[in-house]
Length: 273
Length: 302
Ligand SMILES: Nc1ncnc2c1ncn2[C@@H]1O[C@H](COP(=O)(O)OP(=O)(O)OP(=O)(O)O)[C@@H](O)[C@H]1O
Ligand SMILES: [Mg+2]
Image 1 (cartoon, helix red, strand yellow):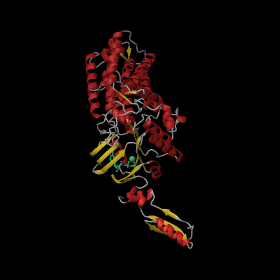
Image 2 (cartoon, helix red, strand yellow; image 1 turned 60 degrees about the horizontal axis):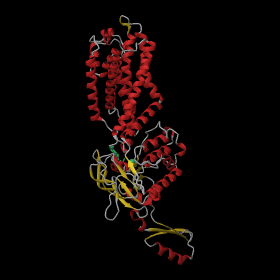
Image 3 (cartoon, chains in turn red, orange; image 1 turned 90 degrees about the vertical axis):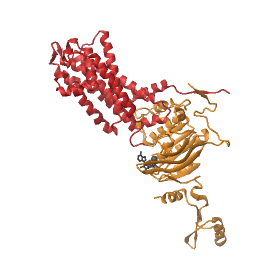
Image 4 (cartoon, chains in turn brown, orange; image 1 turned 90 degrees about the horizontal axis):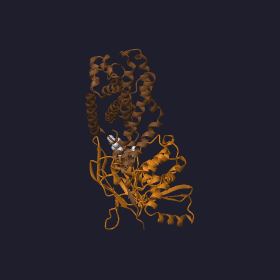
């Protein structure tokens, strides 16, 4: 008689299985996908047409500041808004309950979300960069050092936004409630972070200070430092790119977001007890 | 990573055997759960033997889902002892879940995936899953393999849930109102699926239902739950003393319908035969139906 040995499915396999499902579900839900990707691009095109005529510093039109900052807006939209709503909907439609009922290590669920967030964020960045460089002459740097800066800001920004999005998913009671509860604060945050109004110093002082408490403003500032000539640093409130401070604020938000997630994440809805 | 030799191709933890060789798949003692001061489960005892098909019957709000979800490890109990496949569901780990299949009451997940993708996805979580084609065949979804789950009818969607529940070859399958929304033919198909699982694979099955015919067709034993307490347990045949309850004998004599209630229907019938002749017109002998017993049991708590 041959003895059959059965192996536990590997955690890695289950992570990739979840990632596959997350991606397919996202790209198959057309309207939501188009909205997620189109919003920053539409805003960039509309606002850009205004700021195209203004010069931030001699030789640099404000629309380039806008385009660089909109990358941060796009990351916020895919990582924060989209992730939060998708987790709320997973809780409501029974996905989370189902997954708790099958032998799945919890990490596999989050790994799936990480892949979803990374893929959509990269796609969003590519889209904004394409529109920015095609219509607003946003220069794409050749210096590898600038791409290195881009990479760490992107990774810290995506991580922070995704952790905050996961934490935020515990707030709304239903998917219907999720859209306003997640979108409204994000809209306000984009405004006070100088995503829509450039240079950010055009905003009233108190609003700038509120914006400076959150990661979005720092991500936008970081992306401006990657894509704009150093002369444009004069348009920042501090008159400099402040890489050290950007890294500190984003890292602090990653840590805070992680703590929030660990303390507030719920597998079940409020009504299942 | 550990691997367990399994000549019988069955996953899950080894069965704990008592001296007599009989194991309980589920053992519950004095289970209690209260929501906002009102008890949903109020001292339930349950024993479900390995291989048994057990039905939990009860009106809306009786506490069926609450009980089942405590056994499934979704809800925490307030007090009482629970052992499911030899472990406490509140503490059991991932391996324990290899032996458990679930069909939940309201799920609408995987809406944008196809039926086949869904079944294959959940198969990946188990060490020895059934092949996806076999499962779709088993639940009658073969023709729908390529359809998005979103586009299925309510009853078809429910079959997807059943498919997910059985794909891992569970030793114990929980089904919470599995046939709600099924048409009569789908219900019969489902019954034969349950019979197959029970007879061929020895799967232990705990199902909740509102349908008495389902209980009579499927269950080895049934418990009636009302207001959080078990009111009676037995086989569908003898539930609530049904088999020994007073029978009603009815017949037609002198153009009139007559009836009498008796513990000895045979005596009554032979007496009638002696009086009327060898063929008694309109003869019926009835015992309380399962429905009568059930309504009686839950009526007393309403
Ligand atoms: N999460 C909860 N919060 C508050 N009360 C609850 C909760 N879950 C169940 N209950 C209450 O507990 C009681 C039992 O509910 P349960 O869902 O277990 O009934 P059921 O027998 O499954 O009913 P149905 O046949 O309608 O599915 C009900 O009175 C219900 O209102
Ligand atoms: Mg129920």
